[in-house]
Length: 224
Image 1 (tube, rainbow, N blue to C red):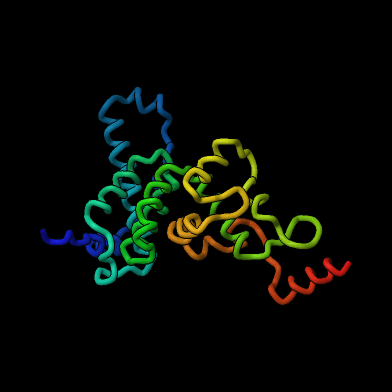
Image 2 (cartoon, rainbow, N blue to C red; image 1 turned 90 degrees about the vertical axis):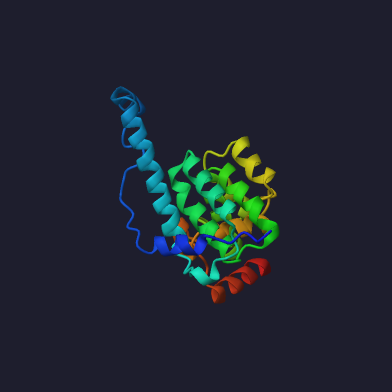
């Protein structure tokens, strides 16, 4: 049986000419749509799917993907990710699906991680994925605390606001966070789903110590 060829290169070609239209998700209330009847519902669904497909392609193309370097994703995997993207209840996650597909297609995600990451981006909420992004940033930069010296602790960054047991346990059940720090799988998810510009202290509203200033301050605190 011939090996299934990747269609990702053709998707990338199509994405090059896409101009994403600004269609406000959720602009119409559920009741107003229901009152307009099944035709209006069908059109709203088609528009929503098109918007997510456009976002998926745009995000995938951001990774400087070329048809010749995007052969590590099969047709069935691509279709599965597109279906998961359009079926997801959160519009904000469409670019995350696209970037993950790009990372898989270009071999930036190793084979043992691809299916756990595809499953996790579907199951975790955008807020949970964003919280993992904040933890990744805190793990890679010495974030300046609002008071005192030292740097922010990773568990504090993960906790954020409005964290309940479900929000805490779900990322842990997917082996993304162990209660103290982000795991290797979690790091893979963040780097695959979020652009480099989204993985900086400034991108999450934080500031970081300069590396040449942080160490003397820590040593001074230890000596005192």
